[in-house]
Length: 202
Image (tube, rainbow, N blue to C red; front, side, top):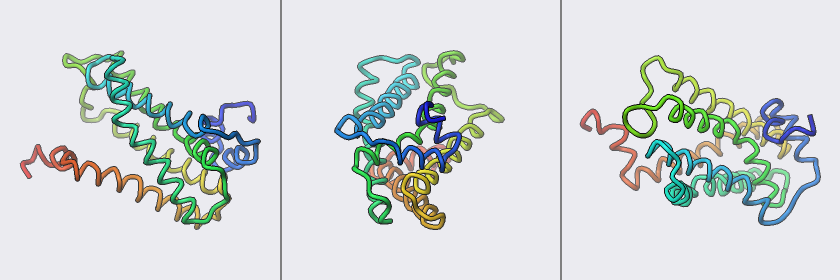
């Protein structure tokens, strides 16, 4: 199992996988801090380009990556803040971020699956077709969200060595800060309210 990619190790065994990764020789430097967040940002940029135009347009993908880089940057800020608040096992920031982003596989696979929908099941209009009633979209979204929760708990429990109650508290605080900040961003930019209520005239 130790020869497997870190992402697969923590998916298959969230707590013990993270515990093993935390004990391995740690890397240092700016590249360790940037590599996994950068991969996630590029994946998000490519996905949004595909959704918008029906294909990956390099200039659009790069500009979208820059515009949405705040998402992985926010994740870095949130996990750093929660780790300090809980006084968890100290890690150098690059190592902490690298371990945390090893748990991003569920969302990465979900984005790739939706991208495959655009490529292999094209609609008459460019971009991602709206999910039909009874489609697998809600189930896949729920599955990715639940698995992501399990992996984030595994990060707090296994990598940071917190007790179960403190790991659950860390998970709740992490979600409140992360998703609360994203919701606040859309509210302040007047994008969330029209998306949620525009169709019903509120």
